[in-house]
Image 1: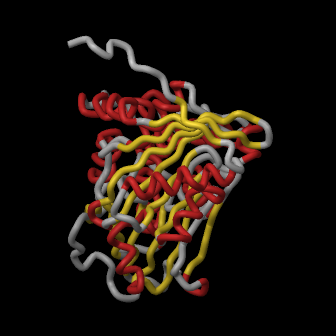
Image 2 (image 1 turned 45 degrees about the vertical axis):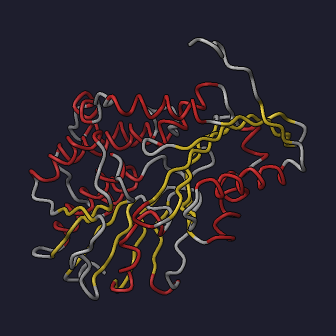
Length: 350
């Protein structure tokens, strides 16, 4: 497909994280090695976070063409282009670019998530290269480089390690294969300390405030699943949803849902995180049992892993989306759901 293409558009998920950006830039490098003179652009929906700034600098320095796509779409996707979705679990994750994928001659998905939703792309137009046995898309890209016997420069090897570190949360969610891949990358000349440095950033003050608001706004529920108590936290913020959900999990919840408004799509985004408990996660498939039901009712899409993922729901009202979510949880628990409430301290401090 690459040999027969003049234009390749590489699209990571919106607000690309280090795994998505490192994988996209390295794939762009590999394509240039496979076909000289080919036009390759990395089109990033909504841009990248502060944790990607150093990776972005490396990509730019190595002449990787990149463009950020927000509310307006310039002529990024050429008619008949080959489009690559990198680290994308759902068509909704490419935001406004989803309205232009009909220009793609073929779509190739390179991803590692367990749940995917690429409707309404016709099956004959999509080729899915998905590795559920790997912990990050960066590992898949490294494997692709080895399959084509392409030597990868040191800087690209290091951004791949940073992508692996990010998606595995510093190896917390790593598989035996992850350590094997990182060992192989290090043996090729990558510096582990450089890779870690690439994603070491101080969180801005408003990230701290977002987590505080998340805690202040959240509602707590206890549900019974297969005679097991499961504690669920639900909240809403304007940004840093993943950080907020992780904060709820660290507080003690088994599952956390955090909603935010997607202004560009006039929709609601709900992300989830779950405690790494195999027994609990066997009792509930958070995306398929909960969020997918909202997607089926209102439209949208999503995907992810057992313990992390999200969905975009075609609703403009966060209140309605979260009420529906609670109703779905109640159904799963067969009505065995209670809200947990406690009196706040210092009710009359003023």
